[in-house]
Length: 225
Image (cartoon, rainbow, N blue to C red; front, side, top):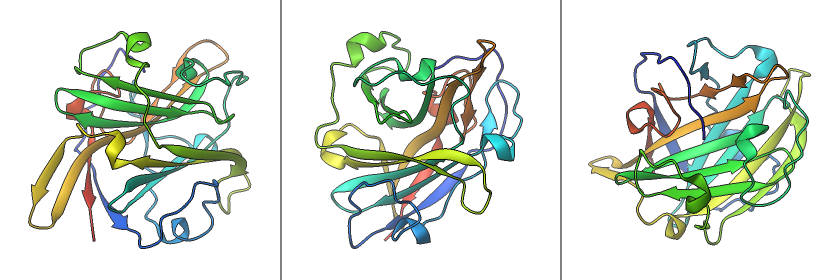
C-alpha cells in the first residue's frame, strides 16, 4: 500500500526464477540452500526520486518455485521507526514491511511481512481499488512464513530476513504469460517504510508509476526449470 508524487521512467526488469527440487520450509535461514544458490535482486530505487538505495538502507529479494508454491526471500535494513504491529492484516506499511505484489487479471495480490512476523495479505479485484480493509478479508490459504533478525551478508550492517511459501492454489487468478521457455508472471518486490520525520521510504524493483500495484511498473519473473 503506497502512493507517491513522482514517477520514474525505467526499463522493465526481468528475473529468472529458479526451480527447486526440495521445497524450503520457511525458517528465515537465507544463508542455507536453496537460498544460498538463488539469484538475489539488490537493485532497488526509491519510487519518488529514482535514487538507488544506499548500502545502509539495503533491500534484497530472491524467488524460487516448484509446482506447489512460489518461495520468497527478503533481506532488509532495519526499520527507521519502532515496529509495533503484531496482528495479521494490520496496516503494516505505516511502519515497515517487505512486500510482494502479483498481477492478477485486472487486479492484484499483495503480501506484506514486517520484522515482527506479522503478515498482511490482500486481494484487490481491480488495479484502481483502494478499500484495503475490505480486501483484507481474503487470506492466502496455506501460506507459511518466518522472520529473524540478521544483516546483509558480509556487510556488518544490521537488519532482518523474511521467508515465505505462497501456494499457487492461494493465488488462482495470477497473471501468467505462457511461452516456449516457460511461464512468466508479473511481480513487484518492494518495501514500505516510515521515516522519523513522517515521510515515506519506498524502494521498488520495478519502475513503479505512482504506486507499487501499478501493473505497468511490475517486473517480469520467468519461471525456469
